[in-house]
Amino acid sequence: MKTVIIIGGGPAGMTAALAAAQTGKKAVLLERNEKLGKKLYITGKGRCNLTNNSDVENHIKNIISNPSFMYSALYTFTPYDTMRLAEELGVPLKTERGNRVFPVSDKSSDIIKAFEKGLKNAGVKCVLNCRVRELKSDKGRLTEAVTSRGSFSADSFIIATGGLSYPSTGSTGDGYKFAQDSGHSIKICRPSLVGLKTKEELSGLSGLTLKNIAIKADVGGKTVYKDFGELMFTHSGISGPVVLSASRYITDEIEKEPVIYIDLKPALDRKTLDKRILRDFEEFKNLAFKNSLNKLMPKGLAPYVAEKSGIDGSKPVNSITKEERMRLEDVIKGFDVHIKSTEGFGQAVITKGGVDVKEIDPSTMRSRLAENLYFAGEIIDTDALTGGYNLQIAFSTGYLAGINA
Image (cartoon, rainbow, N blue to C red; front, side):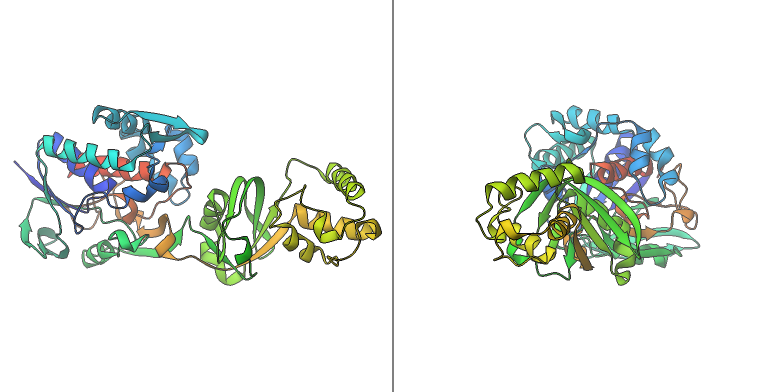
């Protein structure tokens, strides 16, 4: 019986170990943490957005880096296979807005427990608190993993150590070193699906969530991303689903000072918005301008909008000119924030970059440089938008590596 060592007990590593064991190999899973799936515990805000209940083509559309590389893996182990596996392991699922799939219980821990049970039943040997220090090789073949708990020999090796996002869960980039030691190239790694820090001081809005807004992300005067949905202000800037997705398109070009424009009222065209404001102004004609916007937007946001419009907040509403009203509408339809940086890897959902896909066989996940080395999950240079797509990448590449290793 051939022995396969899987380095990393996240979603990709656990799937790889399960697939390897189910195809008749001795699978040994080495995990540096005290438990498996530590990063899975925090995905989907602790609910675990397992996958997206849609076909492979939709998943490909939502993969931004190297989507074509993922065809074989996704068609071999589809989103529906992920759902079937979870339910076979005893976790009932549900599909929510945007076809996002979650455990019915809303507990990511249920997914972890199910995998742990599945691995045990399949005969996988899980070695916890075991950090790999080095992969030794001989004449182009890997021979053993030197770890904090001794050395482990195997016929093949799967690196599924994750990227650099959420380093507190153990993703500290060890896998990139192992890959480089085997001759692999690493594409520049940056935080992706991450909150953005703004030049503007917006801490007074921290915690405020805006639903049903539209955003436009511009870099160097060119629009690189548009979206509609939910945005949240933080102590240092902006976050929320639409911002996380936008970050993927600007993380490489932060030095160009990207600008995010927020349309606070996307359902209203300018003419309709003007009528609405005139109606409010008539109702509050004897109030100061700064107190006239509370029906139109959250109370906390009104002072910021008023300031951006350049209208004196103490000015009586009944003396506001048409020109000033137009400026107000400009701000409401394009509340601009200037981005100075991302929140960094500590808050990033995913890592953009990783092992160059040109050096990996997409039909097996085998290294083209080391004959018995395979890759799975976030360590590979492929990533997607939010919605369960990144976890599906982990499951599909993990399965493909596991059956072929």
